[in-house]
Length: 79
Image (tube, rainbow, N blue to C red):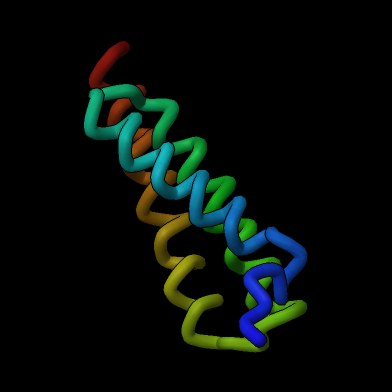
């Protein structure tokens, strides 16, 4: 039987946050970067503790850096 909650629903929450972040960035809302960073940190935590996937950890670590850079560049343009 397929268990949709193998990872206590945390993977679903991280995925939902990622979708909300993409939507917010598509609407030119800089807070999408913050939501993306939270989702990426959740994916890192899930991967490190439950999934044990170094690829997911490395990819999301890069995404945290990329989203932080995007947020900082957005804030610098507004000042």
